[in-house]
Length: 256
Image 1 (cartoon, rainbow, N blue to C red):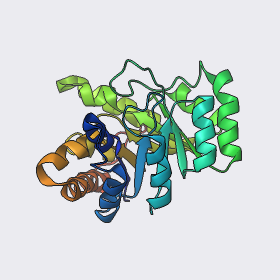
Image 2 (image 1 turned 30 degrees about the vertical axis):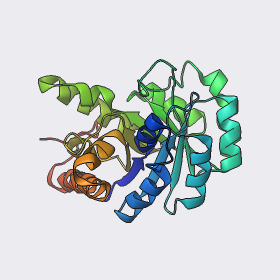
Image 3 (image 1 turned 90 degrees about the vertical axis):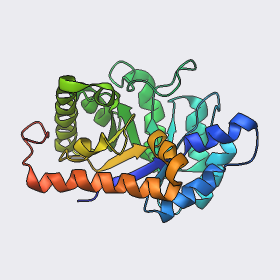
């Protein structure tokens, strides 16, 4: 079992935009990541265009040779862009202008009425629909009801937890992942993952994909982007190797 590694190139654009230059180019970064073994490229086109721009999205669609996942808020403007650009997948995420990065999952249960027509248009266009949600069974069920074929579980609480509080968060991720798989959904994970804390997440039996950006770009500052991608791949492989050594329990977590 090999977990798909999708690299988010948003923060390459953050560095570029800090000086208003044309470099570093997130499209060039995407190519480096693919050569290093990334299975896909993710980019988040935010409503305020704070990092990735419309031009970046179009160029990524043209140049990404593996798989292009477009993260976006569930708005009419973003759906129109997705229908024009036709990424391989769209991941719907919550978005607030004042946040530094996406915080928390999209509440697909409470917002189902507003989300349903937007999701239907993406699905009807043949675009793979993923929803970024909290690791909660009700949110998993709501995602499936909206036509999602994948859920991306928000790993922020797990990543921020320390000491004994981390194990319950990992178990929570495991239960949600297992429920999603049993419901026929693919399971991805993302937010705050590093090459250190991703190992236990990769050991979750139902997980098939991770989306990681900030940690890889941060590591690249010291060792280069190629090495950062390869190091993350190595960490994922260590996690998946644990699946054959440790039997998952009924929650999908690994029994230690």
